[in-house]
Image (tube, rainbow, N blue to C red; front, side, top):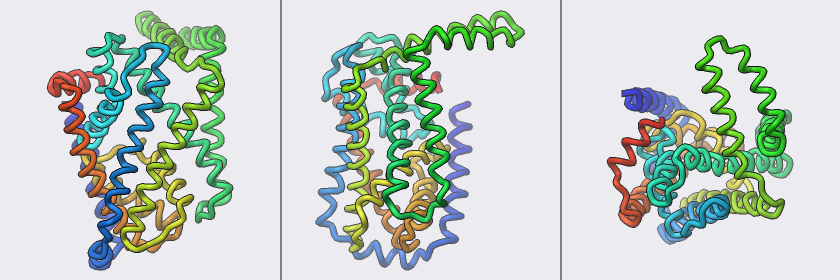
Length: 330
């Protein structure tokens, strides 16, 4: 019931965003732009759609290698299945399903496996912030000049906290031990301290050599470059040549919109964020920006459904059991 309520609320938000989006575009002109699509670019679009989860699967393999050396094929299909779940049920069920699969197939502890998956995505988040800061200096946009301050502060704080959890765990324990005294109920204090100790133990997976960290960063940046190439060729298929750097920057900013609650299939949030990024940030004509967003939305839905179902079959997953456990964790 809790999950259904969240999905219902997200759907209402999506419907509202569609309504707002429709007020800024001309649907007739969007239809005319879409009617001129050049099908020869579809192969490249689907190729880069496949490369993105494949690169992230390689990163996850290296990330989990000290714990378990997992087959890259399984991780590629696991990303495909997780994308399908997140697309249909956008409450981060895909990440939880990854942890459940790792527990079932490789006997990894469930709670730690789920945290490791989110830590893998946390690396993504740090790279996104770093890329936003870099692109803010390199790419011309309509963003305010002080825009870079916010991602810089968040990036700095996230790095400091990560460093403390990994290398200064004794200080972290002391800080949270002091904070636990502010909690009145003893049972809450006990669970609070256990949770902090669990986080410190789990974060230890990030204690790596500098070259390993650089590899994670490189693979993350490469995955977003593949995402940017998808947008680049989507625009090209509509007869519009765009700056690849802008498409790359746009994908990086788009990653932050995943933090916003979304309807199933990302209906509404995809169109609204596309118009905001392409037209609001880069100054692309709104109807062209919306036509590309709709085209991308359709193609990514086709890809995710096909790739996700193939992944489900390849991994021989018990979908009912996965969903039951995932809903309990959300």
